[in-house]
Length: 407
Image (tube, rainbow, N blue to C red; front, top):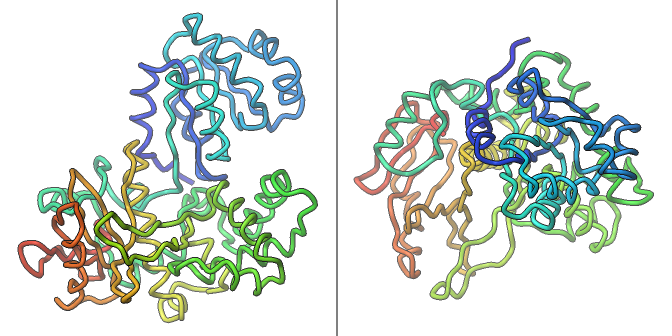
């Protein structure tokens, strides 16, 4: 089993030289603890609030907790003791040195709320996603995905070429370090345990008296709809819960980084756009497990092959930004005349339309909807079709054909 170096590491170390407190959020089992332990100096204390005695002390007497543990300190799963945040603020205001506090938390939304309430302006917040294909298969430095020829040519030199079979193997394998690194080899046991731990710990804490088997069925019903516009009623009917319950449960999945949404793009000049978001999972391996695809070959030929490929592309683009500590301005476009663009990315004041296709030789008709964006108030820049073509190519000067392995 080898440690997989994370693209976020250098940003973590650079910010530790500037900020007294670093907060790393992200889903369970994406490698937050492993990465920080790998990079921490011998003099840094490590404390996990999974330890019930440490958690009790941190909650009941946070001042004593911080007196007992000398700085610099790494506090793992800090969401279990929000009482610590105001005391960390006092320590920073009293002159705590850069890098004094490293914190991790698995509930990103909750962590952001706590950081904004208590540590505004005093903490650098980093979001660690699951492994990107650049981290697993690529080389060199990570850069956020951009639709510019120079940037695409640079990505070509840091990616690892992959044919369609290879891409679906990456999708099916997923992106959780425990399985990708080879630490665990039985995929079904790994994902079953992952779900059980998630439901027992995070979900049970957020939803009182939740029916655990029903909630697992709910996650499976959501996984069957990746890449689709969200239909809460359909998911609720599949599981036999009310629409209101389904909405609350989806909020839990979003807050714990199991799912995310791509919001529809609109502006004041595009009046007839839809308002419904599209649903995606952060880990496509979890989708493949939940939807019971037993091999990459069966997934490649199954009913979800296009949707899960789109999910993979969207999540990889977002990871490239998270791993550079940057925000990703990404939407999709659909209007009431059924014109649709898979993704619309905003960068440097321009909109870049992106389409995802399984094809090796996509046709120019796929860029037809891109001109819809010309009706808006933000200028349209270069566009791209992200597909299975083995090499970087172009339809014309304004529209590139980009292999998915280059993302």
